[in-house]
Image (cartoon, rainbow, N blue to C red; front, side):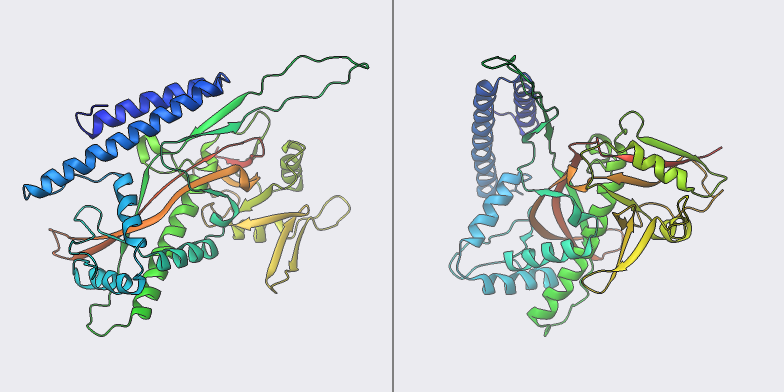
Amino acid sequence: MKFKDHADYMAQRNALLNEAETLLQDGNTEQYDAKVAEINALDAAYEEFAQKQADLAAMRGAVKAPISTNEVNRVVDSIMEQDNDLEYRKAFMNYVLKGTPIKMSNSPETTTTGDVGAVIPTTIVNKIVEKIEKTGNILNLVTRTYYKGGVVVPTSSAKPTAEWVAERGTTDTQKKALGSVTFAYNKLKVQVAVSLEVDNVTLEIFEQTLIRQVSEAMARALDAAIINGRGTTTYHEPLGILAETPASGQAIEVNESTALAYSDLIAMEAALPEGYDDAIYVMNKKTFVSQVLGMVDTTKQPIARVDSGIDGKPAYTLFGRHVEFTSQLPAYTAGTVSADTVIAFLFRMEDYMLNTNMQPTISKYTDQDTDDEVTKCIMLADGKVVDKNSLVTLTVKNG
């Protein structure tokens, strides 16, 4: 396999991915598997090509070419295979605080590069992931996957049906229709303000500060993308739930001049197909409290409840369904919208798939305008709805 440059490699790879997707949709699984093997061989060949390019540039004393994601993973693996986690964590701290290149005692070479920066140690990454999942209330409701970017992941778009037949009767063989979703490499970048430029900072304080700042920033960004993300093509971010067009009859609309009514919520319930009983309501807390909490049905019974959960915290339900609050949807007051606005939706959250590369890296650079030393953290993420049939939106119409 030959490559002129990275763009040539990506062109070949995308062409193969398109062929694989077509084969999968046609149900030709045997040729699909062969095409996937061809893609893997292409990746391996390019990784070797990129490594030799980087080695050649290093021997010439030049700056290394941009390193592929495969190369980042190779650096991660080479570091984590060593039995000196504490040494690397301390070296990582010095790199972030002082810009000191990371060198391991059992290797004469620097394990980081100007392009990749420093790989965040596994010990810290695990804590960051745990913190993100505790902080991001929307993030921890969706399906999390860790596929390599660019991989075509099959999803079932239809289900076969059963038929009653006479004794020894036969039915037509049904071809199971398959869809697919392809995850891209969307870069989520966090500017990390670790203001600990002192000589005697402890490893524990540094890691606590880094974990808090990185995880909170990433959790907010991922929560926002899951709901309102605009997609990869133009905006280089995941495609959010509300970017999907609801199925016919599942987009409920209300007039902006009126408060929410019992009939509006009943319309949402009626629009939800059978089989999606585990769908939940998502809305701003102020909308729930001011518009829904005091609402009663035709027999004057409250339709929303606030109970004490097993952890002692309030648990909110509407028609028996869990209600999840998010600031990513606006708080609604009658007559306040300036454009058509979704203020609430029903959705089975596990039908949103978020694919993340949980091997974030840290790198440093100097802002030439301000002369500030900036530390940034980068991770890769993409997401899409894989089954939109549970999505029911409530939109306030402007005008």
